[in-house]
Image (cartoon, rainbow, N blue to C red; front, side, top):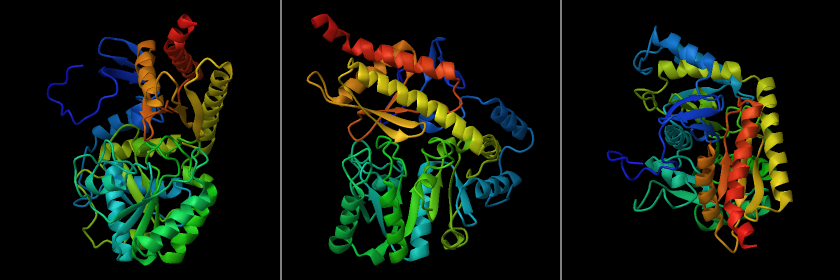
Length: 423
């Protein structure tokens, strides 16, 4: 694909150009049809061009397109933060700031934590991902490709292993790493915040250990550390619940939201306890486009559509189909590169293992091409880019979802076909 005026610093997964979309289906400029299992990297939980959201945005265009909220407030922003207070399942009243992107929400959360605690140090986790802006970048739990050639990054930031049933790290090991960090690297009373994803996105859809989450909450309470949950990718129904942290039995002090919050329009948020959110001096938070009126119209509609019943139904349907299909693929023995299923609910990853023919990353790279040729769009994740992430819209029609998985299966068969011929 020829991209003469686009920076080579952007990595393009699929060399096609999408022209239109409807729910879980898209068409490129040549009219080729695809089933979309990327969903804007978790942005389109309600699918492409949901009719109710399209109508809300069109209506908003006719009345007000934009007002910089910190100059002249507008009602849409106020309605979104009020809706978030009702939508986010925490026991305390939310104080919110709307932003343009998840990375911007992360940056502002760091400002809030520093202002609230008077401390600077941050603890993040191996394989985590929190954005590409400079301070958020240093939180990411891997170097390539995000930190290459950039030199020193804003800190201090310390990383510890991520405990998960989807990895070989358990709660005891992660807690021991934290205690070692406090003894060797930095004292606990100099740590402003700990930031963690309840389900890692870029890290391969690994679920945070529930026992560790409870022990982490207690540790933060004991040392006066702000606990930040990053649900930019896992939030707004991706796991079959409004937010994944509710599965862990603990509440964050600050919550990062984005991606599917506005169904494709640029919006994100940092929200949490008022005593922390109000610690930044007046004027220290804000942004020209933060909480744009059109994005707010979309967000209000998203939350109205995402009832508990709808999310549970969509999530269960998708989870059941993915789990049963993966089990059948593994049981067949046809795909030696196929490893475990990671994640929870409708946020699922498939690990690709090394074989004597290729690495897991090479197998997955080949699948992305073969699947695109078969008419389904896929996305990799994981430190070694060997975990397939499945991000079809929650609203995908059952027949479309089933057909997408059939196309993936055909693509997998094309990868192992040379073995059949050799045999």
